[in-house]
Image (cartoon, rainbow, N blue to C red; front, top):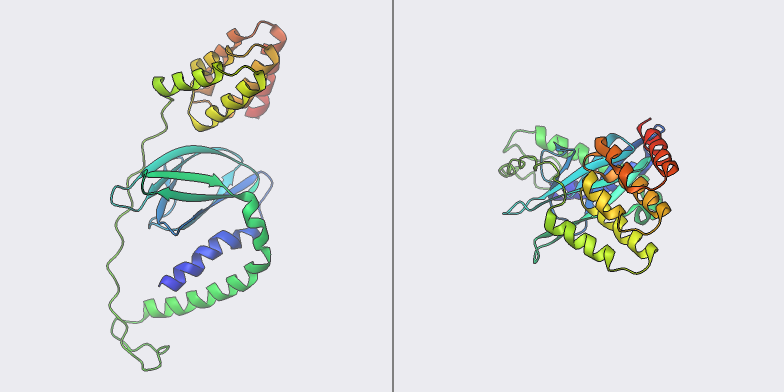
Length: 268
């Protein structure tokens, strides 16, 4: 059973390189760094009924997704974040820090490119292991195993795994305390490019409302920086249907028109 899971996890991580994605289609491969077992929710939909150290999600499209990770540990530690998928395969690793009870989800697209030459042999080996496993599963308990040299009885299967956890609560906007810290970090920077870098990092990490985005935009000195930031923030906004409220941060009408054109292009 352990050997089968080992090869199955390798197949999930490596075999995805050979699928044929249609234009604008995307899929997600998530692998544990240290063989931790976990559940994955995509937009609050559970993707694996049993905890696993590797999960492959297909039939996605390019865009922003809410990803929740729940560890298979006594406290069922969870985290929720959002990712921007690109066309084709999107590779991520999950790591869990037991001392701080913290989960990290990291993009590792570049790390898997060296594995192309290994896929064929692992696919063949996994198919063989699957065939042997299916034969074992379908054989009545206690019947001799033909693959065992002495024909020893098959042991009684272990009890089933714990049921999957309930879906985590949906994403919530950044709380006042964290948002105040974000604003202070940006405001304390002298240079405009440094402010913009911090603002983008915070926007990717938190769900910010339109009102919060407006407060951040007002921390920039230049109109073009405000425009660049608000274009970037659109895909990460908690309530993008209210983006029209951001017109108030601009001094010039052409900036409002350019932002509106950008939003329309993202909705097509």
